[in-house]
Length: 218
Image (cartoon, rainbow, N blue to C red):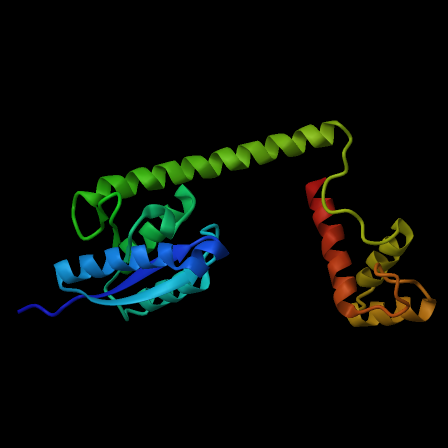
């Protein structure tokens, strides 16, 4: 008799209302337990309650870390949109499953990376993900070019006056640390962006980063 697979079930609801009512969570968990019983899995369920799928939330991150470490055989979700909100995100997770050799199962679209028939869908998702990335890049490039043509200053707004910004750049070129520059500005009586008489090294660092980003965008 073969050993039972250890699977991680992942459930997510995106609003606080759904999390409080428990209806969305309970429905997903019931479907996962039914599938686990049918297939003879050992199932552990991880949850993200009241969180969107636009990022790798704590529960999903924990699941992916366990799978990467070889502590489970696969990940199962009731629906694709519980796992990810974009094709790019879904394709990235499917690629992890493939390279790290664990199973990814999505019940609603009948995706099961343990079967050969899933390879076509995985390739299709990867193709659409690449297409989506290129479209986003092209739209961003076109928007920046249009703004530049209109004379719009690109990059983040300046946190300080041009005189202070040039002074900071000059001191950095002389090799002064962020802390040393902060001390110089405080002694000179320059007010910080928050209007305080005392400067912090972190504020100087943030201003330097903003200046660098403005230069890169131009």
